[in-house]
Length: 250
Image 1 (tube, rainbow, N blue to C red):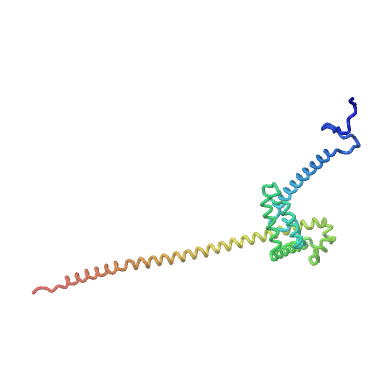
Image 2 (image 1 turned 180 degrees about the vertical axis):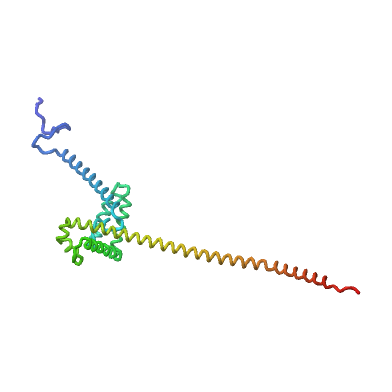
């Protein structure tokens, strides 16, 4: 005999709703977990593309900007940040079409900061930018202070805080780097122009020597002809003289 009540083995269909105050079924928990994972992947992919764009737009003459660090970073900090970013934007993991370009830019920045001479040169230029800014602000006696002490000063706080100050230092550093790059390019152009002038002089000297050698060779090649012509001329002259001086018959 049938009963109107469902057995304990009955399972709710797809259209079933979870009653208010009841927990989700195992099936809906799995769906939610998959949805969360999908959203997380999409967010991660978006963040990777944002980071690629940041690197591509970073000021290429300042490797600190590319790695999003400042000059107080240690070598371990630089290596650690490079590893994180290189894995994060790796072309195999990022759909951005210019991810390979960003990856190469990142590698070059890490390489430059790992070379002591180049990093010392850049740090000196950043220190110069900071000195110029302090002078422009009219803050007497501030240049002798260490970076942390300077950034904790009342002047920096009144300016708008450390973030504002660092942006100003970065902008001034950019100006100095651009000026230095322009000087470097002009010097290179001048060197190339001088090399071109020297090359032209050498080419002209080689061409002159070649013309002289060709002329000497032609002179030697015509030597026999010139001798024969001279002999012919000499013989003709002698015959003319003899005919003019022939004795008169008595």
